[in-house]
Image (cartoon, rainbow, N blue to C red; front, side, top):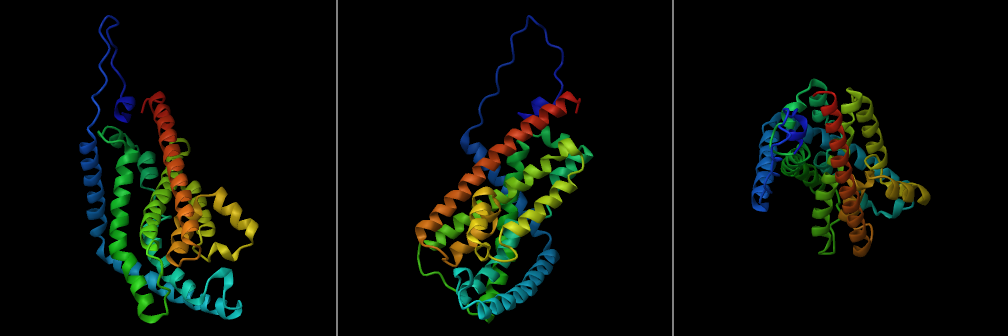
Length: 295
């Protein structure tokens, strides 16, 4: 456990028997604990009602602006820019405005701040690994964002624009799984960047770089399919950013066949697994550094 690794051990009697390993935690207890942490994350963000309303208003305003831009692109692009119809691009914009708050790819530096202030020592003394506790809280935050900030922009799109409605039944569960994986990839990337504070003490530079690349390479400003084909392959296979935004939206508008959409969800799963494993490895190394320095 990180708490045991973080605490200095008293001098032991060389003749005494070694301490037995701690008993494993039953799976049911671990699931209940994870669910309780996720529920706490949901309740925490549900208290910011004014911020939720302001965020929805901002997303709707930017959605109207982007929808106007995309309509102009369709008018000047021969009708199917990037392979999207006008209705698909409008849906891309409005579902994307809702998804922004769910995937939440920017402005999270809570862990870096706690590392800088030294408060992370309290996290390490808790019985739950920090990576697990922050991941559970992130799922609770995302669940609140679905209810508080995803539905309203999509509803505005359906009320005032011609939206594309998926025709395949498989699209809906694929989209739901893709959104969950988008949250996981986004969280793992931001957690990894926050861990740099163990070495740099001030993680504002890496956080700014993450925000810049996430905005440019995830499809927030425009669909990545507007780019040349070689650039699309490079970004899709070489970076995790399309997993955070572009893939769920392409599934929502059925930009590709169902089999290709399922393959992109598998790509999200691979990136999410790799990044979470990397987070765990970097955290273990950071904790060893903390112990060596007497933290």
